[in-house]
Length: 432
Image 1 (cartoon, rainbow, N blue to C red):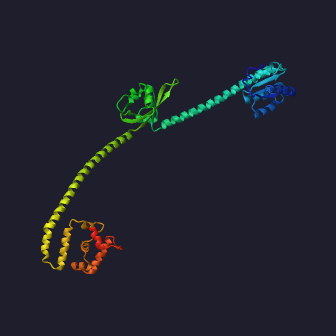
Image 2: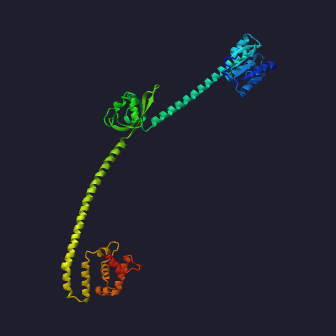
């Protein structure tokens, strides 16, 4: 017959303590046939040593026949040290003393020799081991639960610290929008204590930017969560002092056992200053757009003015050309008859310059980068007319050496030094 707990108990480790070698070895052999691992010792002191070296599921001993320093005392020490380790007593004395020892040592069973069969021992052994392992598993689970509870408590403490240290307002509201809790930042921002907030609803301290009631958001909490689970809800919070703060609220639902929304965990970031800056930026951008349009209008007007100026400039040039051609040049021709040879050369230059009055030569050689002096401009004009240095010297009444020095200065200012470029040809090219 298979004992009741045999199938539930496997790999049993038993320690047999008895000073009768025949009985001890016989019992060990019969237990091993039941797939029970057995170690045997002859004394209580040896049992103490074995228990310190190996984990056992059961201790089988005959206290009356166990030698050592007070067998019962040693087993009491074992009981005290190893707690719930099952102890099965086998004794040849079925008297009150054996019963007292059984009770005193909290033994699982007390069996009187001789054994009627190994089943007489197996039934209490498997039951005791089964209960022992259950107790150990229960103790292990209790320790694990205690450790997990400690971890959860620590996690809650850390989470609470983070919530309180957060720079954002964090609060919890129920399905109706009633405040359940509020962190320290929320207290500072709104001016309410957590106790006061528990008497308020979100609707009583906040409104939407478009003026709608917050209550309308919570009429259908499930639909509300679906609509706003991934987006921030901009709300205007009215502080206790009356000041309004614009905040972006994000929320996450807390479900009950049936999967229904029980609470909303909310985190709200004060973006009042940000909104003000955004508004100022929008106004600045609008102003820039208006200024740009105004600048465009001014540019159009300026282009029209420049066009008029250019037209007026052309008209003036045409008038000057007509006056030079019809008035000044004929008068100079009459003057030619009264002049000597050198004066006639000056007159030719004057006439040529008048004809080129609107040409580009004067403007070309007087560009800021050239920085030609008036005398150098005069000599440039004579060189362009094909006059030699000697002729220029005679006309200007200066030495030829002075004219050469001016020619060198002109070449340097025109960037023609150490270049094989004819100055006369260069100046004629500039006049085109």
